Image (cartoon, rainbow, N blue to C red):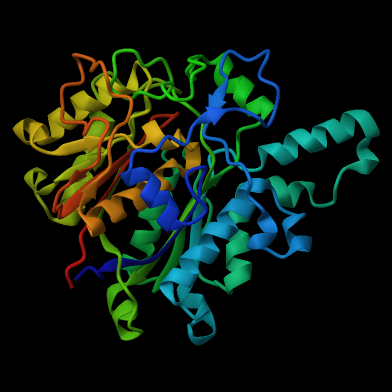
Amino acid sequence: MKRRVVITGMGVIHSLGFSLDSFWDSIRNGRNGISLITKFDTTDFDAKVAAEIRGFEPTDFIDKKEARRMDTFTQYALAAAKMAFEMSGLDMTKEDSFRAGAIVASGIGGISTLEDQHQVMLTKGAGRISPFFITSMIANMAAARIAIEYNLRGFNECVVTACASGNNAIGDAFKVIQRGDADIMVTGGAEASITPLSFAGFCANKALSTNPDPATACRPFDKDRDGFIMGEGAGILILEEYEHAMRRGAEILGEIVGYGCTCDAYHITAPDPEGEGGIKSMQLALNDAGILPGDIDYINAHGTSTPINDPFETRVIKNVFGEHAYKLAVSSTKSMTGHLLGAAGAIEAIITVMALKDGIIPPTINLVNPDPECDLDYVPNNARKSDIRYALSNALGFGGHNSALIFRKFNG
C-alpha cells in the first residue's frame, strides 16, 4: 500500500510577497507582480519588464556572514524554507535526521555570482576571485544549505530540468516519502536569474515579451501575447508522511497524490507538435493518483504567454480530458507572477494547494482578447470561489521535459 504524503508547511519569496499570506492574498486578488526592471540598464535590451524582487533583506532570515557567502537564489530558498519550517511546527532536534531530506530545484543557479566573478577576473585578475565563488554558484547549494541549516541528513539533491524543475523536485520528493525512504522532505525551487547575461540570452532566443508595459506584458491565452516574462524568487514546501504528521499534531494544508513526468525527445526548445509527452505526463499523474480525468476540477497551467505554448497546452489538455476539458477551470498564474523558470513549478504548486484549501480558483489576468485556439475556461481576470477536490499543476521545460502533479484537498 502506498504511503500517503501531505503538505505541512509552505514559504514564498516573490515580488508579490515575502510570506505565504501576502503572496496568496495577491494571487487571489489578481495583483500583478511585474514591473520595469531596475536591477540593470535595459536600454540595449528588447525586453524591459520582469517580476523583479525589491526590498528583500537576506539578514531578516539568514546570518549576515553566511548570507554574504551565498548567491541570491540560495538566500531566497533559505528564507522560504524558514517560513515553511515555522509554519510546519517541525522541531528537527526531535526527528531522525536520516529520515529527512531536501530536493530543491534551480534551472540556472547562481548566475549573478558567475557574472560578478567573471568581471572580477577580467578587471582584477585570477587572484582576486572569491574563495566562495564555486560554492555560491553551483545549483545544488539551495538544497545543501537548507540541509545544513536544519540537519537534514537523508536524501538530498538538486533537480535541473529547465522550467519543469520545480515540479520534478516536488514529484521526486513525494516519491521518496511514498516508497518509504524518508518521513520528511523539504522541496521546491529557487531562482534569481534576472541578470544582464541571463536576460540577454532569453532576448536572443526571442522567448521574452517585448511589450514594455508591465501591466499588460504577460497575457496567457490572449491573442495579443508575445512572449513570457521572467520572474524570480523561491517556493518551498514541507512534505511529510501522513501518519508522521498526524502523530505530531501538524496542521495539514493539502495532500499530494499523483506525479507523472516524460520527455518529448524531440527538440531542445520546441514541444513535440503531437503533444505525446505532455499528454502522457498528465495521464501518468492521473494513474498514479488512482483517479479519472473527470475528477480533476482545476488545472494550474504552464501557461507561459508565448505564441507556441498556450494553444499547444490547450490541445494537450483537450486530448487528456476530452469533453471534461470544457467543464474544468484552467488558469495561468504566470500572468501575475511571471515565469520563475526552475522555481515556477514550486510556487505554482503552492498556489494550487492554497486554491484547494481555501476553495478559490486564481485568475488569469490580462485575458482580454482570447485566442480562438485557446477556448477553455481560463478564469479570466477575477478569482472564482469553487469547492474543488482535485487539482493538477503542469510544468514544461526546454529539452522536452513534461511534468504534472496532482493535489487533493485534505479532508482527513
